[in-house]
Length: 140
Ligand code: THU
Image (tube, rainbow, N blue to C red):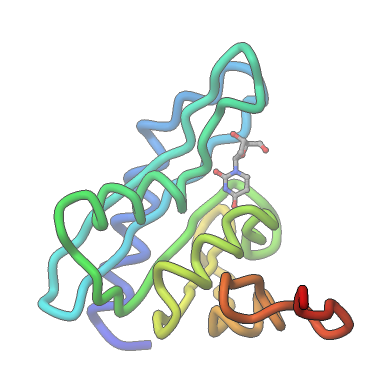
């Protein structure tokens, strides 16, 4: 693996320490690297009304986008799972839209196992406003 990817995974693992996972007890860390080499980190933040919580991936991507970044080269996600963590469905949609050409690097609890995916592998045939799922007809 490239040195910069190893570093990005490290950023994600360190970001996990800032998780606010009071309800699930399941901390997650994420880090994105932009084309110009800047890193933005994220961790999951939970709210007592659970649906308001945000995953680590979305926090990292929204931090980057809200600072004006658009060109996301890689996203690393770290969790305390035995196997590399698997992003939730909501995050797959967000990754697909905000980081369509990023390499997605997933790691397990001690980073002994890594998996790499493209956004389209995580979300085949994802939703977008100008691309309806097959079978949905245009309104006449
Ligand atoms: N979570 C993430 O932050 N990222 C993932 O890829 C999987 C799930 C969070 C959401 C919630 O705060 C906790 O993990 C348990 O689901």
